[in-house]
Length: 177
Image (tube, rainbow, N blue to C red; front, side):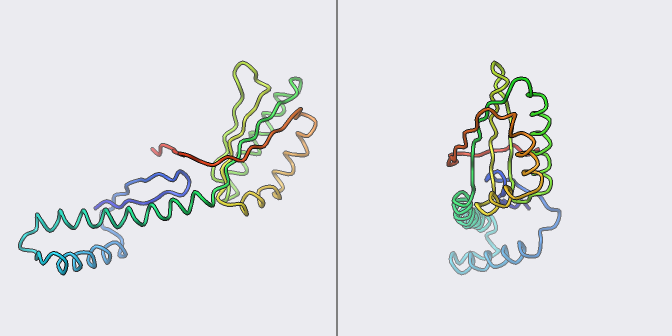
């Protein structure tokens, strides 16, 4: 049996396969099969038609729940792009500090969903950080963490310019292996 589960970080869907479905799923399937018998009047004597209708009804219900929670989730996400220009004489030190700050935030802060830091190949002092937080509260909490404060203090003389842009997601996707 396969279950469609919405993922929090990517907003995508993954199919998880279980040898034996969890109790909640078995109860859900049982209740849906009772509803199908009442709606269609089709008993177990016509399993092919019953299974097809059952699968369509289950898919429709799961989609309704998934879309509603995905839309609510997108409204709570805080997505920002930070564009920085770094002093070329201090670039390697800056990269080391940024890498440490990103790794720590991802490891210890549940509200920090994604942090991607990149630099332009032709202009290595131009750094862009793509940030996704679970909520405004998660973003505010991130700003108060010791590792973020350490990063800001250590890099204040390295950063020549900083532009923070709040953006709204159109489509966010991550391939899960």
